[in-house]
Amino acid sequence: AQVKPEDMIKFRQSGYAFMAWNMGKIKAQVVDGAVPYDKAQVEAAANVIAAVANSGMGALYAPGTDQGKGWEKTRLKSAFFQQPDEVRKIAMNFVKQANALQAAAATGDPAAIKAQFGETGKACKACHEKFREEE
Ligand code: ASC
Image 1 (spheres, rainbow, N blue to C red):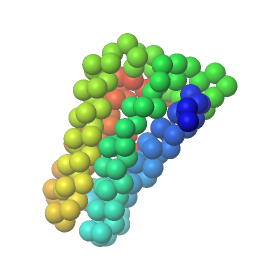
Image 2: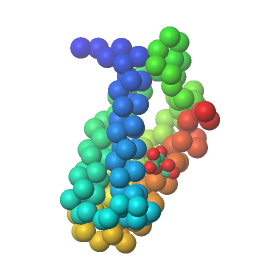
Image 3: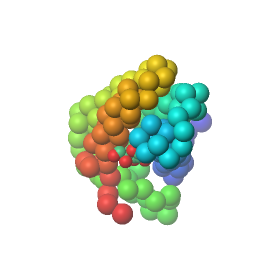
Image 4: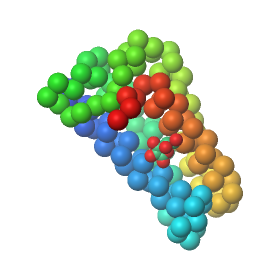
C-alpha cells in the first residue's frame, strides 16, 4: 500500500526519536558515566540504532515531504531534494558509522564504544547542519 506523505514524516521522525533515545542510553553509560556500564544494554541500544539505520529510511523522503502543510511538522530543508549526491554521501556514512557502533558495542570495550559514539554523533550532525531547519 502507498504510504501517505504525512505518514512518511511520522515514520521517519519515529525512527530518529527512537535512535536518539538509544544514543542517550549509550552516552549515559560510556560518555557521561551517569549510569554504570552494562555491556548487554549498550549492545541492545547499538543494535537498535544499526537496525534503524539499515532499514531503508530513504524511502520516507518522497518529493514534497518538506512541505508539512497540515501534516506532522518537519524541519527538512528543501535543499535535501536539490543535493541528492550529498544526501547519499551523508546517509551512507551514517549507516557505516552506525554499523561500526554496533561492532564496537559487541567488543565490550567502553573506550572503543565512546570513540565510535563520537564518530556516529558526527554523522548525525552532518545531516542536521545541511538539511535540518533550526528550531
Ligand atoms: C544524539 C542525537 C543526535 C546526535 C547529535 C550528534 O545522541 O540525538 O541528534 O547524537 O546530537 O551531534
